[in-house]
Length: 191
Figure 1: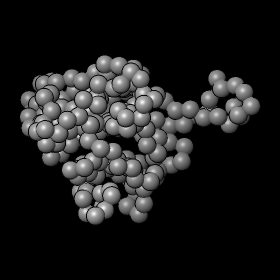
Figure 2: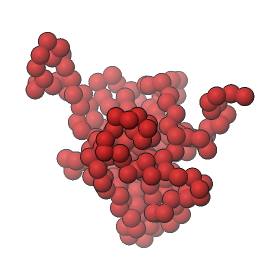
Figure 3: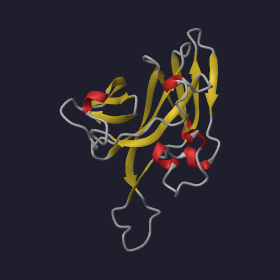
Figure 4: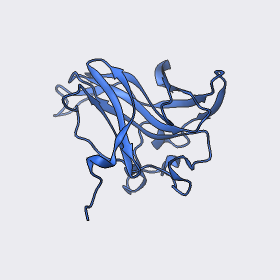
């Protein structure tokens, strides 16, 4: 008996083109991975994230028309660029998802077989506000704070909008935040 999922447990859920490659979400019954690839390798090692929420009704047993599964930054194909990413699931009837990050940055993405992935660029820039002995060469990036994730039907009507309910959901979320005993307050996306 093996301890973790194998490559055979996963399939491509959704992807979108990004400069130099593709941003992809791969997953299966036990969890998902999102990464940037140029077809020959990934910019970061794959990390499996368990699906958040309860699974009584399967992967789509949640109550709302859509749910957010992850909010993070991932390394782009260029070393000094990042992607701010939101991944999630949507029920039938939601055909498009719009994400709004702070700074009026937005992205629209199609739903593919119930899954969506949205991104906006977030490049590294010198952090001139950093002080101290380790500040020389310090870098920072545009924030990944998500303001809203909205699902739309085929007629373009908004059917559901998710907004962060606690500060720990604004600046990033993966299911490990639910059990790390450090993230406080506990993200509502855990449930």
